[in-house]
Amino acid sequence: MKKLKIFIAGHNGLVGNSLINQLKMQNEKIITKTKNELNLLNQKEVVTFFKKEKIDQVYLAAARVGGIYANNTFPAEFIYENLMIQTNVIHGAFEGGVKKLLFLGSSCIYPKFAKQPINEEQLFTGKLEPTNEPYAIAKIAGIKMCESYNRQYSLSHKIDYRSIMPTNLYGPRNSYHPENSHVIAALIYRFHDAKIKKKPKVVIWGTGKPKREFLYVDDMARASIFLMNLNKKIYSKNISNRCSHINVGSGEDISIKKLSVQIKKIVGYNGKIVFNPKKPDGTMRKLINSQKIIKLGFKPTVSLEEGLKKTYSHYVELLNGNI
Image (cartoon, rainbow, N blue to C red; front, side):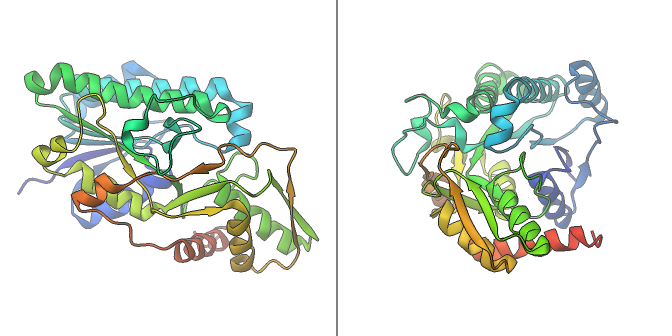
């Protein structure tokens, strides 16, 4: 049986690396390119790459990502780079004859005050969270681009471009930058740094009251491979051509305060946690409804505690130069 030729855009990222590890176990031929080898912001380069390589499947995991601080500080870069990457990869894949593509989005596409848990149909039902609106709009555009290409070309060119919307992701290969990273990575960095430097307290943005749902990256990679390879008839029965994205989450949320206490314990930090209510909280609660993908046959397997321990262990190994 012929091996599938699979291109992973964003292979050095959080999800991309996990995808590589899991797809290698399936003995597929994995294609990756560094930024120097292929600039995803350059459409000509991307189209040329796809026409030359004759790829079977594309996992579009490349993106400009970051937490509240990064989204607030670099909104132009977030919307420009994400729109360009998505547009170039999706269009380039089409031009190169790629039949199957999976676009990895984000649950920030949903309105700030969406009814909880948030199902796929709540897209466009209200205003977005202002702190990450540029990023969210780019991700919505990615979904609509996949849908539009399917509507126009699925019959004539036999393409099948799908979208998966994860909740907040975490795991090994997180960015641990104290200002540009997502919440779990930022907390691990701050608590570990405070532990090593014997700081008496760790200050955290906001009130600690917002609740967030988290999904371990290996579960996200498994969900992506599951959805990519799901029978088209079964997939089509569970979506519409203008609401084709599918959520994936853990099904449980936790307050930032409780999360902070849990990470503090795992790290072994003995100081105090201080919340700064003058800083923005973002959306107060965001729990997505993952019933569609569960009914289709996928369930996450890694608990939050297990995932946090694995993530911190990886971080320590990284600091010690063992990775």
